Image (cartoon, rainbow over all chains, first blue to last red; front, side, top):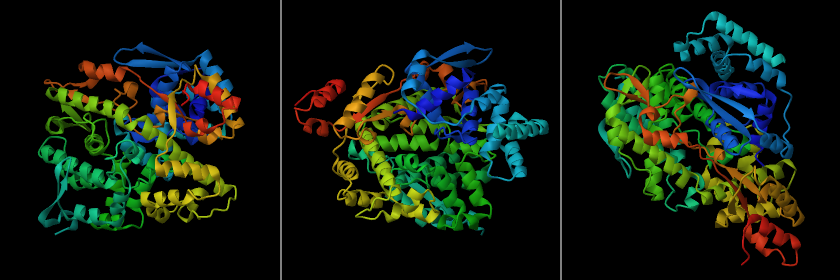
Length: 165
Length: 434
């Protein structure tokens, strides 16, 4: 029952706290691309890979009291934070899921900005293409974000580090 | 004349109950409609299992695809001569609109979940693979199939083109809301599309709405919200979807465990093995799946046979509201009781959540999650819709979710009154005895 919710709960327990909805989306997508079996379906959107299913599942988990969402007003936008609750931890005690260890990957992801994770997620979205074509595609679909050569180089290094962790 | 510019001698029209007429003048579009892979969409229902609830909902993805094409055709007629719009992208937009659902399989969503497939991948494979569709598109330009696939996958460089087919107020949603409302017979789902098309503006790389059209968009958002809860998430349709999904799980499990079928699932073999070729995928449609379901009612496996009887004869599961947090203990007890009376809970005690549904309602997309709907104010400034509209703010601010527990009440009622589990199950589910 609710196995996919339990997998996400496992993620929140591991991450302890996640700041930002975009960051949360990109973290789950990147972990999925690193063979952590989250099952939410992602498609490409204006800001890179995005999953409506994930958004809805997070809302369900908030409504069920498994995680707590807090909203903070910034200069021209709202920022959301997510933390686990005791009800969520109880839920995880009842519904066991089999996931590989991914806490080190989560630590690495948490250290990064959502802008950088958007780049990494976008590069991973095109990972069936040769490296040169991935970079060309990223520049094409992310023309407005102005990622530099250095950003892209760092993203490749980060992907390699993640996959070895 | 180049194939891409070729026009039919006489405009062709398809009579359509939603848009009155679908107009086709481009030779390329006419040829695409005639392609085998597009004609296949006649055999895939747009609303999956909803026909069990709304008997009129038998319309196909073929109807819907033509409808999306027609809406985009009308939008582009309004865009002619407007700044930001590149008229050279016209045929690309029309082809992408027409072909956007090409890769949907039978009872799409459940199939994708059980067999770990993605209809968007198959749309791309049909467009760039060795198919009639691909041969037609290649006659336009060698890289035209790739461009069409990129627009549909939302990775095309011109975001304006992409947003016509896929955004929070796109031709896809505008067609399916109206079409699904028409065929289900519900009164919600209708909105003033003509007005919305008149107030759509290309601005930079997205489509925005002139602020005077806000009320028409509010109506569209309200339709989307009501259709979500009243049609798409209807508990009876969901019951059929639960059974459908369990049939597919059961048949796959049986095959992988070496079960000998009386009626060999030849069309499913590559799906079970996880190596689905494009040809296998294309030839599986809903009439074929329904044929198997009927045949499997005679299988010796009792679970498969029972589930297929239920699906074929509309003997659906009953449901109760369920809160997985507050009722976790009850669920665990029920799970044990179901096992004790010989009803495998894996197939007969199922939680269905709103997040299992492949539809959504409007969200402003804060923090750069996804692009919202923007209103263009008289001074040309853009403002996100829910910041101006109280109605949209109130809908999008309310995060309504839902979980239901499905079970076969007929099996429970058929248990002997001497079995103590019967009363316990009925009490826990809150169902009364006859």
